[in-house]
Image (cartoon, rainbow, N blue to C red; front, side):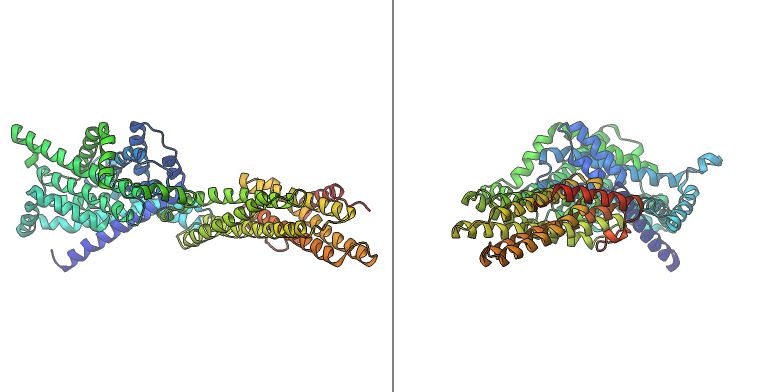
Length: 590
């Protein structure tokens, strides 16, 4: 091989790895977190877990990605270690799909239809479709589909380039001599493990092995140890992912390692024993790309069938490696609420957004509860309820800190336009929920001061604040329910009520000034009433913000500021009708 052949080999390898990365990324984005949610809702049946793991890995073309996701699930408490074991086994089977696709490069036939099955024949068509989709795509789903097609075409082109580059080496005795040394089983396992550990993909390392097989220097007997080593090497990704995670996540990574190591040892001794007895003829035959794919599948299916009855044993082995302790139980109790915000999920933004949304919904419920509790203190003040308001407000602060930091990390990932919009809306939403908690705390302190000083409002002032409070409770309930249920129709009813609340705020303050001028109210009570009104009005503003964010999710042309001015036609008529209904409902008595 001359320098130009070597450059072709390096270029082919680069294209192969890049194509695999692009195709896998496109598949993950197209799934939008759905595959991860399927894994999350796993049943307890080991066989179903194996099938599920195989199916998901076959789709995203990466057992490493599936295993890292499982490490994240166990770390966050979404999944138990016992549930993850079966999926790990299935993931090893699912990853063999890639090697079968790559084996199509070895098809040789004069028949037109059979030749069309060869990747070099159909991948240019996929590339053409992919580039047309990419240039004309207006939706994220089409862009993701174009990435999958282009990634696959580049992957196959890289595979063909590597194969063509190494073909001349078949006539170089020195090169074939190096490869024949792999017939030493221990060296073969070591080389396979190191190669996979470096590129962190067993599918890619098997693909490289398939490309090298065109030299004719590999036999079935020499590639079996290499493939076993590749399966051990793929555990490196999960082991790295588990660094810094909790004990459950580290056990998951060790289950993956033990499964592949034990499976390799059992398969190797079974093969060696049988080969010694029966002297397999095929062991000395030259192996091609299809043969490598077959060995890859047979090995992983064999390891799964042998070890599936011993899933509990693998789990116990992981617990022996990393024993449970008292501090582990205490940590899981204290961190359970926010543990689903695992950094491992950042690589799959669609699922990470879902995890954030589940927590933001809880934050919304807490914001609604804390405001309701704070408002009730004006009617019946109790120290217990005041302390509850304080605790709920502190919880909202923690929600904002944890979610804010995680969403900021998520925003720096490779997001689609829709995902970016969702992250932005969530960041703004948690700020509004936290501010509602601040206003609830203000109201709690005002109610406490009134109780301490034993001051009360006049009947008219009480009535006005009751009407005002009912309107605020209404807008709070509407905005939070709309957010939790993603009800855009309900969100549309928030802004008309916010307009009414703005006018209520002005009217309450105007009536207070009149009473003050007539000597029917003191300055101290007037300041208290003004503080309550300001907090009520600002809570309504935050509710309005939440509703507008939801409307923007459906219509990106809507602007956060000046939303009312953008209304026209039937939408404006409907808005005015709802506003009038609210004015009649929350009308102050003269």
